[in-house]
Length: 506
Image 1 (spheres, rainbow, N blue to C red):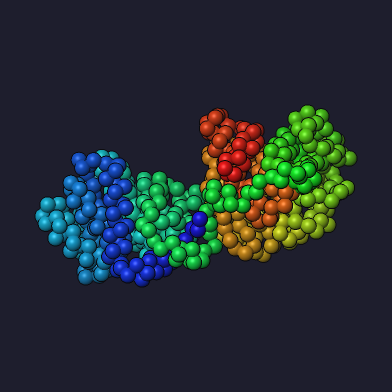
Image 2: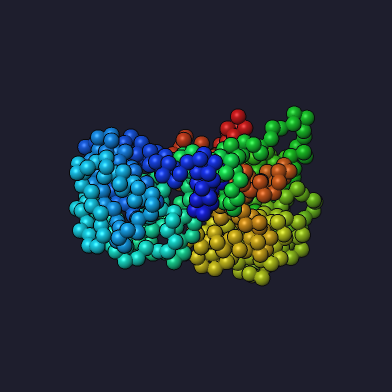
């Protein structure tokens, strides 16, 4: 599913109006109806609502909501901010007049033109934020910042229409989060904004519900975007059934370079993840100390011993493999660092680099430019910052990832609550599956195995990443149903990979 920018959604709205031969007021009526229905379904008429409407079309939405709620027996207090008198948008002005014609003197309606005495608010109230929607171009300032901070400190339950006021739909670098509404519920139109997927914005967005306001489907299909949300149907379309006449070699060969003394569990999890995802033949290259561990825990995998007893000291490929992945549990021993250096300088095909392979590169940053073109790296936030410098937010990391993905011609998997796959063509795929229980040791090692297995089975490398991230998250969701998010461990994700694949192929 496409994640549209604010500008993209405005263009789609304009095309909808043109195609359906309606006016903006009609579209606002449609949006307000969806918001009103959601509010009415959650609270009774006895609940106190305080609606804050700004001077633009977001304010028009809020005023229409107030009118519709009144018609259903609610008596909201309404504050319309018209600080620069007669500066209301045409739709806001029209909805103000419609509201007043409907309610008369039956509700508390205040049009704020100069001074403003804020109403008393407490935890028993519901505030509806219709101050500024996706039309905001600059950070809030002046009296609006004071109002936002007052609402945030009031203890009231806050519902934002479309987007929390003060927030931009995509990038918020330089925006002071103290001046953004902290909503408990955001009722957004048609699709979530990109900003909603960043951890630092979670406290402002709260619960998010997408309201379908029936924008033109053809216009949405034709409107370009660089951002996509990956859902089950997307994966279902790409996953293919197995040919009953295939053999294990048809499912590809994978060399996994992983593990060291005390960290062989990472190699086990990656190998099991690959096998559960259908890789045909998995070979694990690891220190000699890992022989008994691997042959016992993963008897289906082949073991290739390093010459060193406790660390990987050389990566010399003895065969040609469908895919090579390295990193889980390798450690940062000097010999391992040299082995990774030698591998990157000499291997010319795309590979997958994770965990300690990335940490080795971080110690020798000049290796970044030698990573084989079209390779995949899978850092979590700390590993990403080791490679590309300190970043304070998910948004900053994504912007950096877009730049370096293109620079080095690599695909970057930014692991997190919403794992984001960044391609060299600047396309970003946001994952929708997964849960907090997956924040557990070894989860990333499993992901390495899953993605590698899909590449080995000849799925396109770019889609292998997107599919692998989704299946990994779905397996985690299935595991959470059985064990809960507190009780999950990485091996539970492995154990549910087969079920996850079955689920998306139904």
